Amino acid sequence: MNFTLTNIVSFILMLILNSLFIFGLNKITEYEIDNEGKIIEDSKMFLWKIRFLFIKYLGSWYSRPFILCVICMSSIIGSIFYWCIMPFNFINIFIWIFYCISLAGLNSFLQKYFD
Image (cartoon, rainbow, N blue to C red; front, top):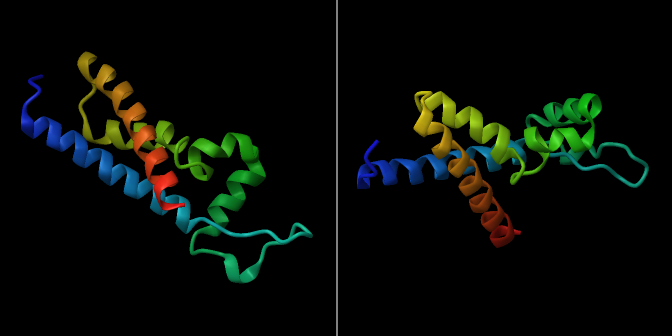
C-alpha cells in the first residue's frame, strides 16, 4: 500500500465521517433521568429506547463502547465502520489500530471543544 496524498485524504475523510456518525448516534439516543430515577418525557430523543435497552441488559459500564461514550465508541463503532470499508489484509490490521486510536483522539478533542 502506497501512502499517497489520496490515501491520506481518504483516511482523514473516514475519520471525520465516522466521528460524525458516532456523535450523531450518541446524541440521538439520549434521555435524562430525574432525581427519582424516572425518565423525563421531554428529554427523550428519537432512538432513546436503544440506549435504555443497552443500559438495562448490559449495564452502564459495558454499554459505553456501544452507545454511551463517544471516545469508547471509537473501538467498536470505529472497527465496524473501518472493516466495512477496508479489505481485510495484514497491513490493514496495523492501520486499523492506528485508525481507532486516531478516532478516539479526534472524538476526545471534539467532545472537549464542544462541551
